[in-house]
Image (cartoon, rainbow, N blue to C red; front, side, top):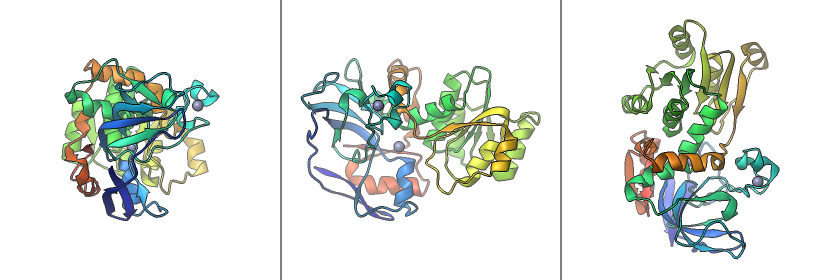
Length: 338
Ligand SMILES: [Zn+2]
Ligand SMILES: [Zn+2]
């Protein structure tokens, strides 16, 4: 088969690779129905995160089970499955506490932008749907694999409750789905921080009640203004830069919650500022596996349409253009069809 490999900054190739096969008895191999490019793929693509030589890419996936190892019990060939970007056994203490992305056996998936994928720990990682879904639901099902699961964790970790005032920092796909998640969790007011018109529009569609275009100190001042000087109950930090994190902490009311789900790059916190802010901090790589059954359900019952974040769909052999479009912010998120 051919698969996606990053060679260096801006250099994405779709080239011959070995077909994935069962290596461990707990593995499955799936035939991809849809995969995509993630905002986090852009860090190494932009040369802001070093790579050690040619690196296979992709960690968001859904598709049909092609083959399973001898120890796999919960999924079988022919079933449609979604899995998290982090594999998990779903039985260790961390998994049982709901932190499958810190599973003691965790591996990060990194070869999903390809027609076939080997998934380790298939029983604990993959969630099957009751039947093969119709093709119009594929984009939304694909989002549950990471970007929606991560947006949902952002809401959950920021303790979004019915009636809450929520701020979402970041208008990438995760931020937009953080808005959708906060809406589902019953937030009354959702303030999206975004400077891009098409993203503001989607944020409003997903449930944002206000949009703030200012950033940094001005952005914080605007949030304070909109909340009678109090700050927000819950702030979802969906970027991962020092500026976005500071903005998130400062926009939160004393006693409020900040979640952070974007892989941090250059984030440093000032101890004094943190001490006097009186906020709860909780984040990390989203334990998507915890939420998968519920999110798949919401999609199959057409309660939500998170697949709208895909505003570009390409055949997978044009994956390089998919990266370029996201890098240049011409696209929010690129879906790749095998
Ligand atoms: Zn991702
Ligand atoms: Zn585990």
